[in-house]
Amino acid sequence: MACNSCSTGKDGQPKGCKNNGTCGTDSCNKLTVFDWLANMSLPNGEEPFDWVEVRFKNGRKHYYKNTEKFTLSIGDIVATQAQFGHDVGMVTLTGELVRIQMKRKKVFESNDETLKIYRKATQKDIDIWSEYRDKEEPMKVKARQYAIDINLQMKISDIEFQGDGSKATFYYTAEDRVDFRELIKMYAREFKTRIEMKQVGFRQEASRLGGIGSCGRELCCSTWLTDFRSVSTSAARYQQLSLNPQKLAGQCGKLKCCLNYELDTYLDALKDFPKTDTKLYTEKGVAVCQKTDIFKGLLWYAYEGGWSNWHVITTSQAKEIIELNKKKEKVASLEEYASDVAANTKSEFENVVGQDSLTRFDSKGPRKKSKRNNRNKNKKKRKPQNNKNNAK
Image 1 (cartoon, rainbow, N blue to C red):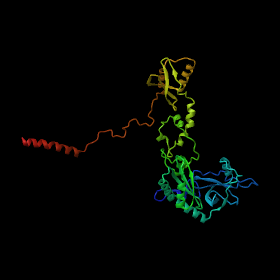
Image 2: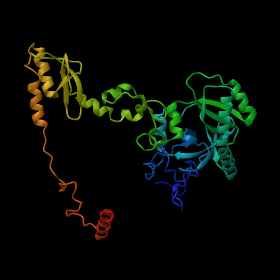
Image 3: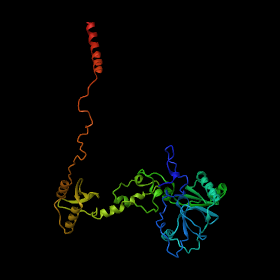
Image 4: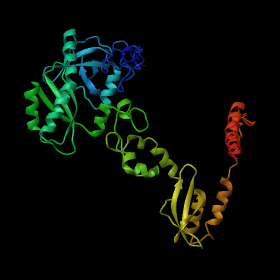
C-alpha cells in the first residue's frame, strides 16, 4: 500500500515518491518493520524501551536513546546527535521491537558512543534539510566531473548531506585503492562544506540506484532484499545453467542474487543422483555420464569410443548398476535399461480443450467470387481475339 504522493496522477502517469521515502505512512520502503507489538500494553510497572530506530537516506539506520522522554511514533521527523552538529531523520520503530533489532545487529545499550535525540524536528530544521537534499543531485554531477578531470578510477554513486548541511558524505565505488586527497581538496573548495568519502560495494550501489533486471521486474536488492549473500559459479553448475557471464551477471556486474533462491531445492534433488564422474561397467564397454535431468530423474550415458550414441536410464537403474559393479559384476548392456525407460516415458496426448483442427475458424465452403471481377477478366480476354479477326 502506497501513500497519496506515490499514486497515479490525473494524466495516468505515476507521480513517484515526492517525499523520497520519508512520507508519513512509510509503507513503500523495503526496510519498513511491522510493529506487531503496537496493540499490546506493557505490564504494570514497566516503562517503555527508551531507544528508537531512526532511518536516513538510502536505508541508512541508527539507534538513538530517547533521554528526554519524547513521545515518539513511527513517521516522526527528529533531530539527532551527530559527530558534528545534528542530523535529521525519520523514526521507523519504537518500543520493544527496537530492543530485538539492536540485539540482532549487536548494538549494545551500555555503549560509550551512545547518540541521543535532541528534539522533534521543527519546521526550520525540515526546511534546511529539504534545501540540502535538493542540492545533492546537481552536486553529484559536478563531483563526477572533477573525478574524471584528475583521472581517478572511481565512480561517485551518491551524495548524502547531513541534516544541518555541515557535512556531505560521498559514496563511491572503485576496483582498486584510490588516492583521493587532491579530490577532497577540490570538493571542499567548491562545495564549502566538510567532506567524507565512503566506499561501497557494487551490490550496494545497485540497491541504492535501483533498476530493472533481466526478468522484467525491479531489482531485488532495491525492493526487498536486505542482506547480500555470497554467490558462486557452483550455484549455476548445480542448476545446470550455462556459464555465460553476460546472462549470469546482474546490473552490479556480479553474479545474480537469484541464483541462490532455488539452489537448496536442486541440492536436495541431487542427493538421489549418483555422482556424474562414476563410470558404469558393462560387458559391452565402459559408460560415462553425459547429461542429467533433475526434474525427470534421468541420466544419459555414452560408451567410451561411441560418444555420439547416448542411452538414457533412471537414477534407480544407475544405482543398481553401480551396486553390481561394486560386487565386481557387470550388466550386459545399457540398451536393456534404456528400452524400458523409453517404453515407460511414452505418453499419449489427449485433446483436453476439444479443438482438433487448427483451421476450425476457416470457412468450410469455397469462396464466392464476385461477378464483376469475372466480367472484367472476360472482357480483357476477348479484346485481343477480336483484333486478330479484324486483321485477317
